Length: 211
Length: 211
DNA sequence: CGGCTGAGTGATTCCCGTTTAGTGTTCTGC
DNA sequence: GCAGAACACTAAACGGGAATCACTCAGCCG
Image (tube, rainbow over all chains, first blue to last red):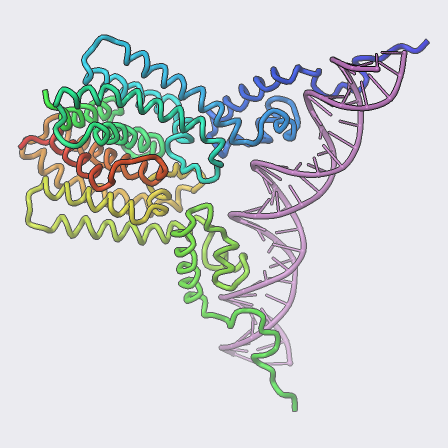
């Protein structure tokens, strides 16, 4: 009678982890590497090694590299969107809402520099449109949520120059500029980031909104 | 008596272009491709093909790919520095100087998007410090030139909040944010760039500087 | 003539993302 | 209870990037 060697036959491979939970492992490993080493540092092979699986295996669960990293980024942007929604629900004046949202935005960027760069600083040339679609949609929803209090300010007739849309775009891009430079040029001798954020917000809000 | 076959021996290669003038050809070809297709589009092989030379030949004249592209970028930044120097020499009030410099900066970015991205949007992770050194120095000199009128404004006691250095950094980064988003996210539905630039400048200057 | 040097080359190396063909295990329908 | 589909996975390879290597010319100088 032969002993049935079920398990130890040639178990060099993973124990048949039910697929979708392998997906989670990949995302977790990829996130760790991506946060530490950025887009180009998060190699398919490195991620696969971290999971303990061949590089090809990742293509069982994801279409390509970008899908992995964008899924991670989407989660992060969703957190940012939640922040905006939460701030939007607070019973405060629209200017304070705008300020809180922009502060949250900049802190998010500084806390998640690689995600921020991937989503807000890259051209997305190499990423096909259908993949970046969800990320773009989430980003747009963030901007829409942020635009609401700006429109409220405009409705109060307190906008010093430009339309509500223009004001929202300028407020956003101004803060984007500050954090993107802080992230991409960290070796330059910057002033204290917190103070720069304050000067940026004070300046833009005082410049665009009347009291 | 043997006929000396000097030229037509096996002249599949380039006619021995005197080294340093080959360098110019490479830069010209690389600039054209870089402007049209950006950093990753400007391949060593593509540049070499355009010159009509093997890819290896580029390494006779340049240490690596980055040195080629940075040399092109340095020329562009020098043009930007010249603009700043010229504006600095005009007999106008410091606020006008600041405005003119920032306008010139943003127009430069929109006119040279790929150069701008390479210099002001990339982390420079892959670029070793010694190569990026000259570019950084040129960028710093641009910022210094721009800082001068801001310091003049501060000396007049007209700064609403923050130090002169902070104000300069905020003014710069605000404008950087606008053009970098216009460049990297062209498909997003932006307002008219000229108007956005005006709203940004009006907002920041009115917000940071008293009349 | 002989040796040196600088410009240029093809082959090669390494790393990247991705594809292909195939292997072993488990589940399912008959 | 068993064939075969479905699944999770792998090794090998591909094509395309940057960069390096050993080598070959051509011209020049003594």
